[in-house]
Image 1 (cartoon, rainbow, N blue to C red):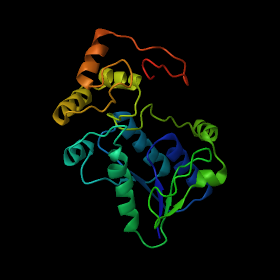
Image 2: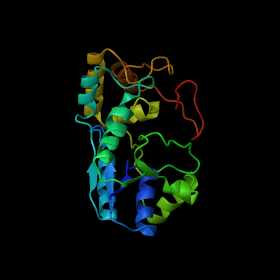
Image 3: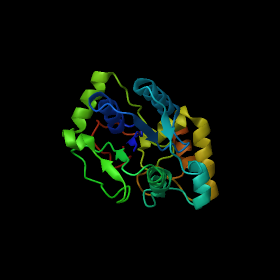
Image 4: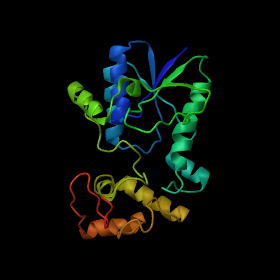
Length: 233
């Protein structure tokens, strides 16, 4: 019987893994669904967590990375076709859990203030949501991480995530030119875009979007929590 903690590296799964080790010590197995499209800060964060937990984080992956899966699927992921989560994360986790001994448990970082997603990994996998049992909400997660001195990377999702905000696309353009060029080339090959056309007044395709960033066009500056109807910040 295995006790498996899903450790994406975001704030919730990070807090879950560290707190479980404190209050329910046992021989946990830590897994993450690496897509091959993570930013360097995310890889560094996983390494730090391995040191804190004293165990390696097992990469439970699809047979191909994100770029290879795009070619396999012959389409880009988008807000209208979020196949990336299903193919690169959910399905590999299900396949991994199904080959473990009967009675194995998957621990998932779902908070008490989030909507339940009990059917996410199928009906035959035993899942626990400890943070829901503890009554932990988002403020509790941040308070615990502050107490442990853990800093979560600004970006924990993929470099080309269709759900990222315009400011995050700008950061990708400025800080990771190779990843940007690779994504722009993929868009041309697939004849589609990661960003949704018409989402805002900025170009959807990365090539044109990059030209806008290079021109110095400014994003609207809004306070955190506000939404700009022009930039979707």
